[in-house]
Amino acid sequence: MLSAAARARFTVVLVGARNPANIGAAARALHDFGFSDLRVANDFAPPLEAAQLEAARSAVSAQHILASTRRFDTLSEAIADCTFIAGTTAIGERELTQPILPLQQAAPLMIAALNSAEQAPGEGEPAHRVALLFGSEKTGLTNDHLSHCSLLTTIPLFSPVHDRHLSMNLGQSVAVCLYELTRAGFEGSRDLPALHESPASEQDRERLTELLLQVMQSTGYTRRYPHNSNPAFVRRLVQQLGRTHREAMTWMGILRQAQWRETRESDGY
Amino acid sequence: MLSAAARARFTVVLVGARNPANIGAAARALHDFGFSDLRVANDFAPPLEAAQLEAARSAVSAQHILASTRRFDTLSEAIADCTFIAGTTAIGERELTQPILPLQQAAPLMIAALNSAEQAPGEGEPAHRVALLFGSEKTGLTNDHLSHCSLLTTIPLFSPVHDRHLSMNLGQSVAVCLYELTRAGFEGSRDLPALHESPASEQDRERLTELLLQVMQSTGYTRRYPHNSNPAFVRRLVQQLGRTHREAMTWMGILRQAQWRETRESDGY
Image (cartoon, rainbow over all chains, first blue to last red; front, side, top):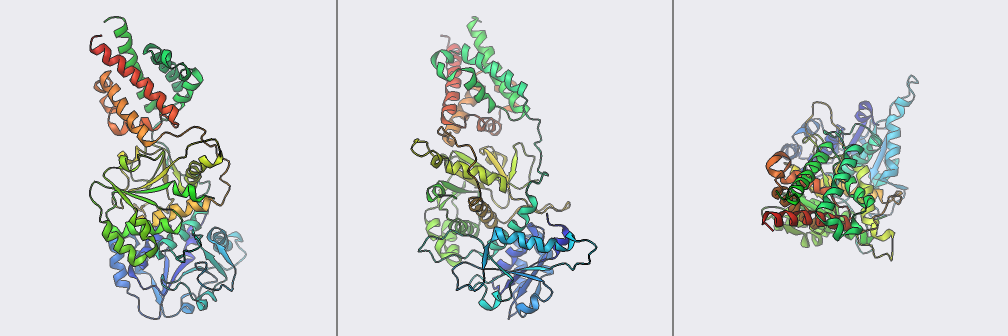
């Protein structure tokens, strides 16, 4: 699990991003997964005001991230305070001169770096600042950009032989990477919402089985379809009735009503 | 690993999607992760031409997916041939009445369903068609939509206490879900039980819902317990009836028999 302090040491750098909608989408992904430090490295002034407008439309709550997004003229300046630099790249884009890890193998290394200061408390070990770089949709990260990286990673995509299009939409890439980074933190997590209704008990199910068998009998179903009427199969059907007590009680009511009508009619009322 | 055949049995349904850019982004995510069946369920004609234009700009290679994207007037029609329906939802959107699994726990269940036909080759075992539903950005999936689902899943997001904004951008959500589906394909997902009988289809379930509503009506249950008789709640009950076609057909038989007796008696035979 990434602590708030660890999350604060994580930086996303968009290198050469030109499309304000993509900057807004990246900001929204940071917000969604609990990060906040977004930087843009460009040799021209990026249209951040347009991005803010775009984001205002689609992600009101990411505005605080865009408001504190910093622009740098070069990648070197953007990552000057970072200690661990990871770059995202599409396989097949160019001749790679560094090893490349699929995202699910790269994420634990970034998480370990983010957590390293906390794993040795009191040791005075300096905290890592981890930067994850994303290139522009058009060109990706150049070899020069990649040369800053100690780790290269890629999102495994489906690549039929004759398909050369292997890069993802920028906002989607950022979302998938941040999902993978926080995914590990949620594994085995227990704070999922509980059902708001009480579950059906085994007793509920036994009563339902008995009643359903009676209905099947009295309506003549058992006689017509004996192979579907043995108690084990009927219990298997009832297993599926009523995950919640309310649902089980509803079935009881429906079946009782059918049974009551049936008995009443048979008795000649 | 999902085979090409298994991928072909996976369907993404956008329910109430209005923004053509989002439809284009979803199509691109399908393409990136090796899926192809995209459907749109709407009560109005969605601007697919606009989506195609948008996608043409940002994702040339997803055009073949948009070209074969089908539009349906209702969700029921969109998923009529699907046997396993999963719905995405944001935690906290409403009072949940069904259990909800984080994406990483839900994905293996979808993969098991997709792979079930292939786990018993030669058995003539029919294949599941799995549908994953996404609601509109504005409203998400409604309780009525969720009542069609046998599985609810959510992308775990970062949720500080006072932040009510918990929903992701639609295109990013689709990308993250498909990433998780293909990611889990690389891990051991083989130890899940396969269905040895043909699964019940959404069409089976719709017919059961209709018949059950008739039985509830004719036996007088509806009159006595109107709060348990609304179609969304009844559909939720039927969700649990008949995981397999044989089970669904058995329920049809039981209810038909009850209905037949009821009608016969009422007609004074």
